[in-house]
Image (cartoon, rainbow, N blue to C red):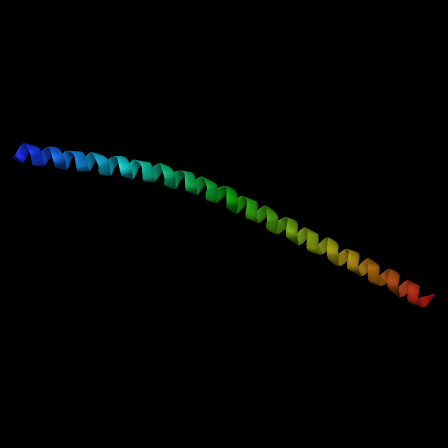
Length: 72
């Protein structure tokens, strides 16, 4: 009877180890994806700032042109 209990315990431990290993692999994969998304987010932030600056420049130029038209 004790051999059966030890076999069951061994199987449960083996299953637990396999589950932990699978979870560790999944965690590593998710960390990699997280790093990619963080980089992508930073790139998008920079692009957004650049576009905001371009928009502000265009607005300034438009105001200037409208001001010149008003002076005519």
